[in-house]
Amino acid sequence: MNQKRSQAVGGTPAKGLADVFGANAGKKSGGVVIGAIVILLLIWILATSFYTVQPEERAVVKRFGAVIKITDPGLHFKLPMGIDQVQWVATERVLKQEFGFRTEGVRGGRTQYSQKAFEDESLMLTGDLNIIDLEWVVQYRINDPIKFLYSMREPTQTLRDISESVMRRVVGNRLGSDVLTVGRVEIQQLGRDEMQQIMDRYDAGIHVITVELQDVVPPPAVQPAFNEVNEARQERERMINEAQKRVNQEIPRAEGQALRTIAEAQGYATERVNRALGESTRFSAVLAEYQRVPEVTRSRLYLEALAEILPEIGQILVVQEDQLAPLPLLNVDRNQEAQP
Image (cartoon, rainbow, N blue to C red):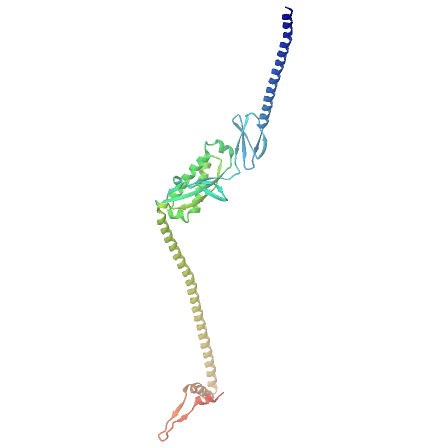
C-alpha cells in the first residue's frame, strides 16, 4: 500500500515537467515560423519596391490597372506587392520585320538565313501581269509606349499586315522591268510613306524608319526568260551608249571643222581684199608717175615685164639654113646656172 502510494506520488512530477517542456517547444517553433514568414514578406516587399530601366527602354507604370507615369532609364521606386505594375518598352531600339526570308542568327561572324521559302509573302503580281519574287525589310521604332501598348491589341502584327498590303499595291502599279531595275528607290520611299500614314491613322505609336528591298528576282520557273530579256536590255543600253559616245565625238569634230573652214574663208577674204587694195594703190601710184613722165615710166614697166617673163622662157634657138648647129639666143638658163 505504501509502495503503490509512493509510485503514484513519484510519477506525477515527471509527467508535469514533460508537459511544460512540450508547451515551450511548441511556442518556440511557432515563433520561428512566424519570424520566417515576416522576413520573407519583408524581402518580397523590398524586392518588389524597386525596378531598373535599361538605356534603350522606357517603363510604363500602372497602379491598379491605370497608367500613372512613364519612367526613364535608371533605378526607380514603386509600390510593392503588385500594387504598381511595370511594363518595359524598347523605345530607343531599332526593330525590324523581315518579309520573304528569315534570319536565324549569326554563326562564325556570318549571318545565317533560313532555307525555307516564304512564297506567300514574297511572290507578287506586277502591273504588266508578271510575277516577281520580292524580299524586303521594314525597320521601325516605338515612339510612344502608351499608344503602342494600349491603342491596339497587336501593333506589330498590324504593321506586318499593313506592310505586306502596301508593298503588293505599290508593286502592282508598276511594270515588272521597273521593279527589277530603276524603280527600287521609288518603291522603297513610297512604301515607307504609305505605311507611316496608315500607322498614324491607327495611332499605334510606331515610327517607320525605312523600307529596304533585298532581293528582287523573277521566280525560278521563269528566270531564264527574264535573264534573256535583261541581256537584251543591257545590249540595247550598250548600243545606245556607244551611239551617244559617237555623237559626242563627231559633233564637236564637225563643229571644229566648220569653224576652221569659216576662219580660213575669212582669212582668204581678208587677204584678197588687202591684196586688191594694195594693187589698186600701186596702180594709182604708177598712174601718177606715168602721167608725170610717161616715157620713163613706160620703159621701166617694159623692163620689169621682161625681167619677170624671160626667166620662165628657157632656151631660144635660132636655126639658119646654111648653118649646121642651132644658134642659142638669150640662153637665160646658162646664166642662172653660172651664178653661185
